[in-house]
Length: 369
Ligand code: IPM
Ligand code: MN
Image 1: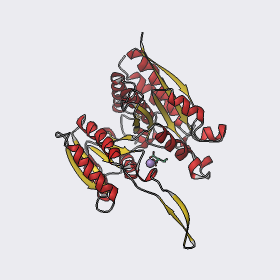
Image 2: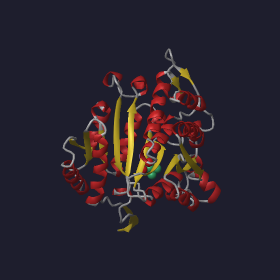
Image 3: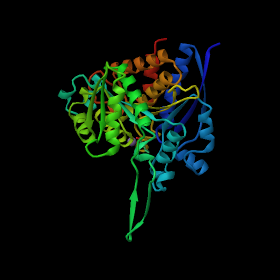
Image 4: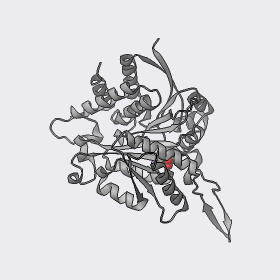
C-alpha cells in the first residue's frame, strides 16, 4: 500500500489560486513518481471567505486544517477588503488566528538570491557575485503581536494605545533550538538578532540563546542589534547563514531579505508547530510574497514560491524529503535553462519569457522521472 497523506489546500485571493494550480500539478507528478498518495481538500480563506461567509477564517476551514497533516496556503488580501476593520481583514484575520490556533511558533523564511538572478537584486551586484542564501528563523506566536495587555483607552483626556512585548524563557528556548538545528544542517553559523541595549525581552533573549548554544558547540553564534542587522543585510547579505529573531523583528527583517533577494515570487515559507505525535511537523506553507492583485488573473505570476512552499511541506510535514529534493532540483534546472516569468525576465540572451503555467510545465519537465 502506498503511503497516504492528507493536506488542506487554501488558495485564497489574488494570484493565490493560479499559482496553487501549478503547485498541485507538481504534487500530482511527484506523488506518482515517488509512490505516495496525497488526499487534498480545498477550503475558503481570506477575502474569498469574507465574500462567501462574512469572515476571513470560517470554522469549516479550521476544521479541515485540523484533519490534515499540513496546510498549503496561497495568499490573501486585496483592495476590495482593505477598508474593513483590521482584525477582520484577510491577512490579519486569517493568518494570526491560524498561527495561534495551531501553535505555529517557528517561521522559516529563506532569503535566496540565485547566482543566475543577481541582476534582479537591488544590492550592488559586485557585492553578491554568487548570490546569497540566508534563512530567517522568526518566532511567530509570541512577543508584541500577542502580548497582553493590548488596547486603547482614554487617559488625561486623550486616547492612548499600548501593546506588550513579552517572552517566556521557554518560548525563546524552543525557537533557539529550531534555529540551531537549522544551522547544523547548513553552514553552522547562527546570528541572533535582538535589541538588548534597550529592551528587557531582548536581554532575556540574548541570555537564553547563549545558554542554548552550549548544546550546539559546532555552531558559531553571533549577536547583532536589530538596527545594525538591517544595515548588514543590505551591505553584505552573503555573510549570513541563519538568523534567529523575535516576532516583530523577524517580520521586518524577512521582508528586507525578500526585497534584496530580487523577486518576491521566488520565496517560500514554513510556519511550524507541534503535531499530535509531538514532533515539530505540523505546518502552514505559503509564498513569502502577497496576493499581487495588480497581476491576478492574467496568468503571468511566478509560481515558484508556491511550488517551493509545496517542497517545504513535503520535507517538513510529510517526511517526503526525496520528493522535496526533486522539486528543488527541477526549479533550479528550469531557471538554469532560462525560463523566466516577467518578474525575473531581463531579456538577456538565453532567457525565455513564460507565463505561470508554462513555468509550471518547465519545472514539471525537469522532474527526474
Ligand atoms: C507576515 C505578515 C503578517 C505578519 C501580517 C499579515 C499579520 O506581514 O506574515 O509577515 O505581520 O506576521
Ligand atoms: Mn510581514
